[in-house]
Length: 160
Image 1: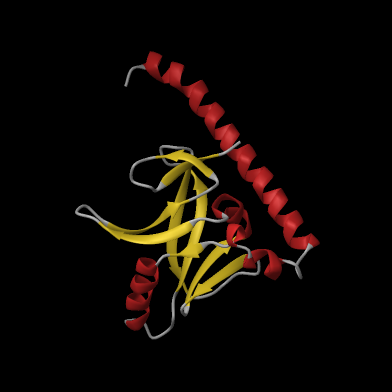
Image 2: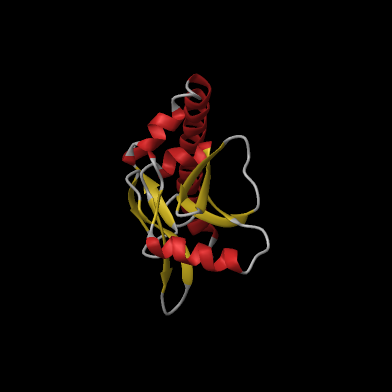
């Protein structure tokens, strides 16, 4: 890569990183404020469809398959990080436990865990499991907080 190209692209990338950092900090502050101000009303707000993170039938089926081969039931953890080709990326992990700042969504015995910071980015989203020729993976199929993303559905841009 030539030095002139790096010099031209570096300010753009630095600006994107600063913007992503600002969005994550804003989201973190609002999530902490929401969690501390209404811990009793969180169960009421999660019951409404827009605040719940949904699990598709394929996601539930795959999690039950994974859980049947494990002695301890695993939880599906969904997180959001800066990165990817669109600014933010989804991160899925199998976990054994929840943390104090987690929100737990359950359907048919399958639990999805989302930390408070990531929750603001995935409120109302639907988690699916897809099997394609090149991969099989958990994906966020629909996300009302996203305005665009890459074709592989692993990264997204947020509404501002």
